[in-house]
Length: 285
Ligand code: PDD
Image (tube, rainbow, N blue to C red; front, side):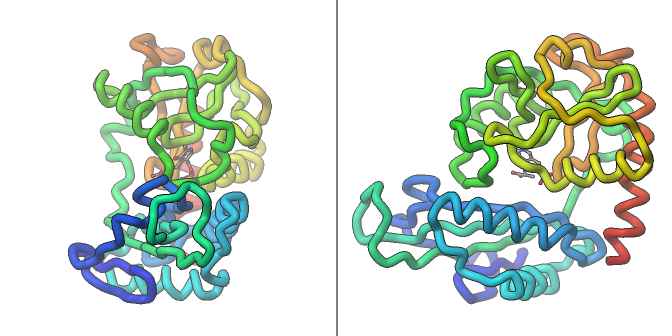
């Protein structure tokens, strides 16, 4: 069984428990991060800890740890689990109160929980075939830039894809692309890579940043701008990106082929660059 961290203790996951009065359980009142680990090195740790800090600040929840303390806890969790490549899950909630009350407790004792799983990235066959996606109206709240554990809307939207045998749900708000239910979305048109700009309406993905950096490094033409739903439906290539999916080509949207219906050349190239970056920069630190 994997080893987890709960409020200062390292223990088997099955032995960890929190109060049913925890505000994470009652209200979804907390922040989280998912940090990929390659060859036992946490990838872009400073950026993940900074994003956590931004979410906590917006939730008015004091960060219970300094960046150094987070690094130590994350290091321990990685070391105490068996896999070289891991996906570390980190969650901070506003803790338990003695009664259910939407307003914050007078004294806040946050609950800090980390666990880890083997990092399983998409298998080659899936990457070579591409994945099917559906689309839906983005009915989430207006602070999708915050990585909060209140993910019910994301769960409902993602399940729409699963119900139709698909991988992800691509979200449109007022006729514009926002992101996926659990990923960011990129498209390619006439050799140009396009993705929406960061805003309150999408999560600022760490993988999104890496893809844009890698693209800039290799001088791939890029446009970060608002993208109309019609443009997405007319894309030559579509990709989803996240810490666990990396860069995954989407080959059908709502049952219709994307471009040729096969993963495109720009996505193939990005996969090679991304793996190269991962194996040099990420694995070697
Ligand atoms: N999800 N947008 C949403 C809504 C997400 O949930 C995620 C990641 C991303 C991509 O962010 P990043 O590149 O930092 O992983 C974008 C994680 C993996 C999850 O909730 O499991």
